[in-house]
Image (tube, rainbow, N blue to C red):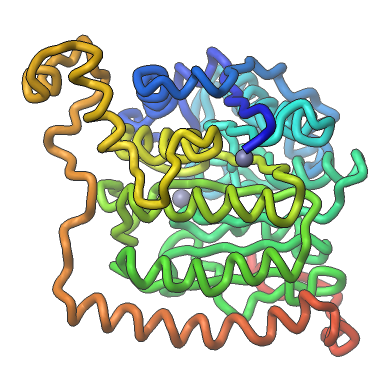
Amino acid sequence: MAGRVVVTYHPLFDGRGFSPLAASWSRYRTSMDWMASLGIFDAADVECPSLAADADLLRSHSSAHLEVIRRGDANGRGTFATSDTPAWRGIMARARAAVGGTVHAVRLVASGEAAHVFNPAGGLHHAMRDQARGFCPFNDLAIAVDHLTSLGLPRVAIIDIDAHHGDGTQELLYDREVLKVSMHQYDGKYFPGSGSMAEVGWGDGFGLSINVPLPRRVGEAAYLDAFRAIVPTAVRAFAPDVLLVNFGVDGHFADRLSRLELGVKAYRAIAATCHSLAHETCDGRLIVTGSGGYNPDAVARCWSTMVATLTGALASPDDVLFPMLHDRMPAMHGHSILGQLSSAALWPLQFAGLPDVPPCPDPAAIEASRETVAAVVADVLPLRLTDIDRLGNEHAPARTANPWVTA
Ligand SMILES: [Zn+2]
Ligand SMILES: [Zn+2]
């Protein structure tokens, strides 16, 4: 896999994060320590991004919204509009660092200085043009699309596998000729409430919002059925200039915010497919953002698996990091694996209590989930692919407003 792999990392990622879930803030440092322990940085460079400038933020947000975040930073208390996202002293710089990582990725990939770039702090997919929400002050994904467009790479395919619907990205790009596939837990009430199959885009974006609403406890088998049926087909039909993967891993079974019940093997399969799709469809130009994930150990495993996939360190599709870790440990320390597992000084993780695969549901439940998801896929796919091919776009309903935004 030719081309340089870069991880963008700013020292501010070590500090406070945007969510009120303080136990999750260590996920960036934990992940970097994992990657270092696994030797991943032998084949990937770490680069510190500049803080995003106002001009970067204004690509997708109003100056009034920048002012709201600035005031929240100055006041240092309270929450933003939807009350799930706290204001605190330092949030502006932290947000500029997160967006700066994605802007840095855009520059590297557009110029060819790197093939694949991972920004762990990017993927703030709930931020709307004028609203911070869902732990997201600014939407770096929409900013990246605008930036890539100005650099002559306008056809961007966004694959959002975070457990929550990418509602801000959808709102900001609803009428743009940008492919947006979002796979998420959905029942109409689960945050953020949007992401039904009926939200298909409008204008130049008609048919290009592909929402894959998944039931609670969907499980790996049914999830991957849907992913494999929809994502490669849609990306190939769209033929992007750049692939942007929002690699939120809050669908991991150990995460407290969702119940998709995925394990590291599922994330490994997703990473491998996205990586090969980038090489197949857009000369390898691939930007990956970290997005959600609130159990630092689970996040570290999944993100490390992604970066190891990008560097080619995981050669076979069945490889996951767990065997890789076990392989390295005896050689590095020469003691029993159990002894090393208990050494927190050597291994910045407590994975003894966290199995690598989700608890196996009974076969009947797996089968039922696969049938439910097959029906979703059958509804999602045919219409959208016709539109992606632009065969039916003249039939796109004339709409004057984004119909799914109600508030
Ligand atoms: Zn590659
Ligand atoms: Zn999420």
